[in-house]
Image 1 (cartoon, rainbow, N blue to C red):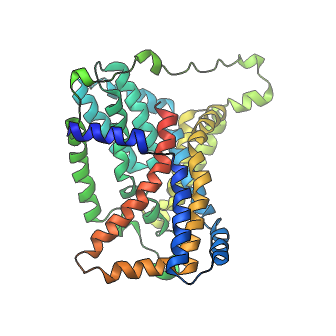
Image 2: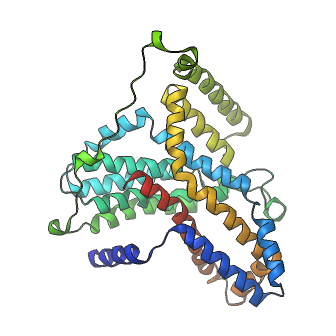
Image 3: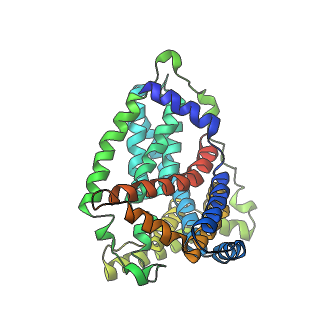
Length: 370
């Protein structure tokens, strides 16, 4: 296991490019495949690409909000204090690795943006308190929980297809989360991963002489800004630092969430999940100013989504309008049996997921941990 880990680290350090390069390469590959496997001309492929480029704007914004609202909630004082207390339970490097993995898994299942930030913040807290813990493995473990995000409350596909009027409603209808996120087969897989992933991470711990640690002094949080006395504040500054405004608008948001569940039951949608996290963040940060500072910090990690998702929409436009998607689907079906089709679907989805994870994880890793 340790040999595999060293090889993987070396491979990623040498050959893993920025995720933006993936989307450029994939765009060119799909363009060439469209020319070779369909009767589309170069001019048509360019048109398909450009016309589809903005087709996922609403979905892109939803994904940005998942990340931003999750980040803001995770960075609120109440969660930071809770992580500090939880970190005190780790008595050894091994227990730190297991604990950070479990916390990351739980947080990622609740919301992938929340999980990314909670995992990174908790890893920092553990690195401050636990001696001789390998910082590389600690950070990797903090992000390993991300593998179950799509099985949880912020899974983009299950929540999207549970939302009325989604892009594929004419083909598959509206599918409730009871048939996806809360289906027994999904919950069983999640439970298995919660057991297996922490153990695998623990097995990857390097020998003491190979351990790379970090100086805890480098992980000290920045000192919060000093606020002027209320008597010295302008009327605008008093409003910005008023907890009353945050509580009033926060209660209004909670009231709508309560109303929604009373009317619809526990029927989650992507918009509702973002709504919940947004207003919980407002309440937990206390004042509008503190909330906006957290939002400004969170947006730094959303750049990859903002830039790259339109390219993915353009790729989708080329594949659907040219007929390439149909050609590829038929090819899978022709070489598949009832037993192998799920495997091929799993592998193709894994490839797509890998590309998406590069968009999100790469930016958040640099932003949160390095």
